[in-house]
Length: 310
Image 1 (cartoon, rainbow, N blue to C red):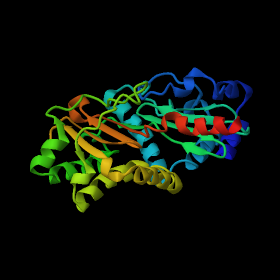
Image 2: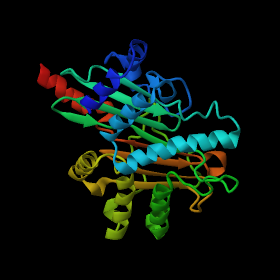
Image 3: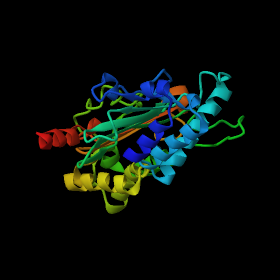
Image 4: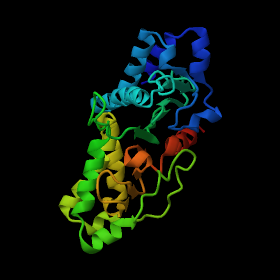
C-alpha cells in the first residue's frame, strides 16, 4: 500500500503534490462526507491517464475484485444520475479525489482517503500494527435505475438489500416484533460524518435468539460489506467480530417490509455497525455505512503505535 501511494505521488507535478499530500495532523483527516462537494486532494478529472491508473493500483491494495468493480459501477451510476437529472456537470464521475495524510515512506502513521458523492474510503496505516478501514460509505442514487434508461434495472447495492429483506421476512412472531424498532424508516443513517459513535445502545433482535439459518443470513449481510475489501482485511474484521462474540450482534429493522417503500436496517455489535437506509426519492436512494466502533479512523491502532513508540 505504501509503495502504491508513493508511486502515485511520484507521477504528480509540484502543484498537484501540494494538494495531494497533507500533514498527518490536518483536521481534514477525519472530515469525511458523502455529498457532492469540493474535497482535498487531486480529483480524477485533474489527473492524466497514468495518474488515474495509479489511483486504481492503490485501491487494489485495499479492495477485493468485487470491491473495485463496485467502485467503478458507482462512478458509472454517477454518470447515469447526471443524465437522469440533466445535470452532468454537477453529477461528475471525475469529481472523486484521492488525498494522503502523512508520509507513506516514513515510519510514522499515515492515511489516505478516496472520496466523492456516495463514496468514502478511508484507510489508516499504523506501521507494524496494521490498517484500519472504517468508516466505509457506499450510496446509490438511483438505487434501481428506472425503465427509461439504457441501464434499466441496475442495482448497485441490490445484493445487500435483498439479503436483509430475506432475513427480516423470515422472522416470525416475537422475533420480528423485537427486530422491527419503528414502523417508519429513520430517514437516513444515524452514524454519519462526525456522528460515528452516536449509536451506543443495541436495538433489535440478538443473534443469540436466532436459529442457524437466520444467523447465517445476518453474517451474509456483513460479509457483503466486508467482502468489498481484500480477503485478508475482510478476514481480520470477521475475526474481531467472533472474538467479541457473535451472539451479542443485533439486527434491527425500521419501515416497510415491502421493496420499493422506505426502509432501514442495522447490524450492530461491539466491533461492527452497519446501517442501510433507503428512504429518499421515493425509496430509490440508498445511504449505507460500515463502522468498527472500536477502530474509527484507526484510533485503537494509533494508540498502540504511540504507546510502543514511547
